[in-house]
Length: 437
Image (cartoon, rainbow, N blue to C red; front, side, top):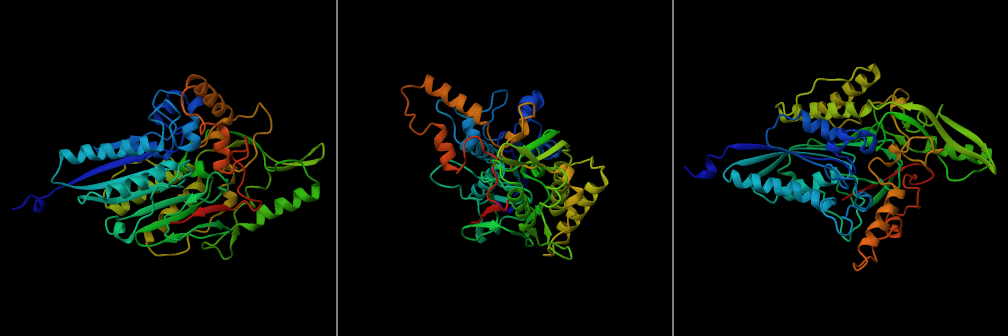
């Protein structure tokens, strides 16, 4: 009997964390590096023996983050290991070495990622399909962000031919994300970019791109439980102007799920916490909250793990549920039931008022004063102050290198960001841009 007729199957799981996310550093110094994400939770719950965790772009274990790499996806001059390509190659090298140890076996891959790590997971999966003995059994991703400073965008959309060797894709995406720097890269094969004014799920037997309540890191994890006091508008204006602008935000973007009517996604979140603060020249539009809870990502971790086990018909993850809050248990159950049906329904009717206490307002123009905690402002993005410091330090040490493209201005210009306003909303309606393949 020929070798290819007696092949057995090997299982491999690869996990790509989000920009600035690193489980080693988070556990070592959470005040500096933040908390773990759903990618760490999935990695640690995974029972597959051959598995790899790839730390997020901009990070290395036991090293300070590179703000340049977090901002652009590229290594700073004179450094390696921080960039998008480094993280991709870490995964590909792991797979290549593994393949060489079992040349006559089929390889079933389970691949997961969050943020830029979701882009990496898709990139890795597509490249892995170049090997004829590889099959992607499950691709589980959270809120894909590319935002790379490079001439060519990674090829992360799948052709019909690719899909013949991909069994299931689940993409959980953030309803309450509207930052200019965080456009969503959809799984869908449609040309161009579209403003997401009417939110609908994409649901097929093999691909489920499902919008869920929360901002980017509410879905993938990484926020610390802190107060949140932020500026919602750039500059002061009259009371009537502020009121009119808030009404537009609260009423424009709606969902089209299984409710009796469509629901505005911002009306509950931008409600009791919003204040019109009198200042010189009029009023500031602000949101003030003593504490934003961080239980929401755990819901999406448990949903991802449970649906992977269900889809694969095997226990790839062993999870003891820690979701104890009643409203979040309902959210979890409704999402999981929706995914299990494998019928292209619209999706659960979300009770947004029940999730406002767990949802961060990621779109903003900064914290209100210096005593406010800055950390959550820079989750999955970069620190403008530390970026400036890193650039100046490297430029001083590398005076002979070509430094023309190594400056702050190119970062802000390339991503259409105003300096210091890295979390600015995409537009006056606070709708998200979606990039299609």
